[in-house]
Length: 127
Length: 127
Length: 127
Length: 127
Image 1 (cartoon, rainbow over the protein chains, first blue to last red):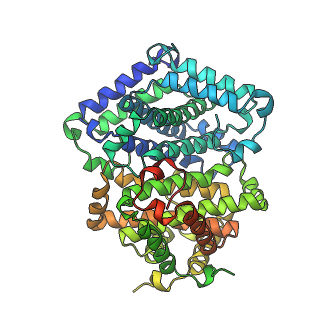
Image 2 (cartoon, rainbow over the protein chains, first blue to last red):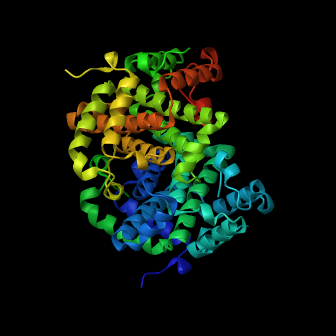
Image 3 (cartoon, each protein chain N blue to C red):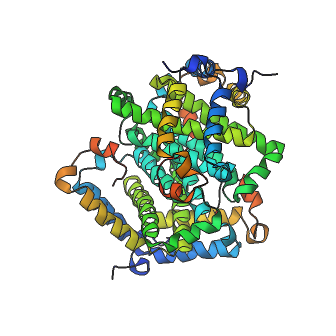
């Protein structure tokens, strides 16, 4: 069985992704700008299977094994570019995520945010 | 000093992100569809500071501390939604990434892909 | 009353948008790549007010005048960049749209496509 | 020769696009939310051929007839969804665009904005 999320660090996958790109001499194309564009492209592909569905149906779709694998592949593409962006930008993602979650916690205190989507819908940032 | 990528597993951050959403009762909004839309929104915000720059300039921008923090925050937002998507979709991201990298390795063998961006530019999938 | 869609041609708005950019000497930044990135950024902003809503709720949101104006502004931004992309790429959009609708009509014949979203959900192209 | 931008009004294409969707009974899927997601998906596809290119190269790509047609098709898809969004949201796009350009003119006065991309790079809104 493949190593799972419970025993894989961010550093390990960042290195594997960097090695993959370096073997192919792709670093020359991997500016932060280009990687952000590629990441956004993969994020759009992740939306695509859900685009005509209502919310609950997006879970049902995952019961189909072929569709689940396609969705997982798109999520993987998003994460691969995000981690390669971190490689090229020298970003420690665990620190960045925790710092941002701290900001989000101050912006959305539990008591004021509980179950509240309407206010969130007009704001610019969310968890 | 905050725990870094070298000692943080995917599982750890997935749990922290899930707890954050659960405390605020946001699971009701976090369908796979909605999360994919939110993720794409954050990916677009990550592109934004680079949109009028040439490739090399996107690295220079990171020398400005305030802009670097803003970029890191946007990358964090992308990753937070990606990991919450994994939570809600019951996806092991380390396995998904490695399986996808295996497919990519077959699609882009080293000898044929080295330094080649033109062919990649017309293809649909990368890294 | 402002001239409406019924008496405004694509050419008229393309010219107004080009003049606006030229006055500010922005043509230097308006490569096709940069404009496509800016357009995608505005498209993401158009999604944002709807991201936590179910489908029908996205219509209800338009009953609020301030939110309607914000949505119309985002749609305008999308169209401004799309038309400036057409300016810079020397594209006749009326011809391009009609040619693409011809392709779509062959891909989605009425008898096979009527009321069918599931097949569309797994395809890459729509309307 | 097909009617061109100089003699096609927004209203004409909005009607043709609405008729296309209505013939296929697709209105049921065309909530504002879903259309904004589909639009963002097409915007991402428009970025894709340019993602590994520098700015100037994005113009060169258009010299290749097959690639030009592919780019024009993607721009058409963006516009089709934008105009169908206008149909479903009852938006007069000519008025919306001109109102937004008025706001942009106040935000980016000619004297302060001329040739200035850096300030624009950190702002949220453009053209």
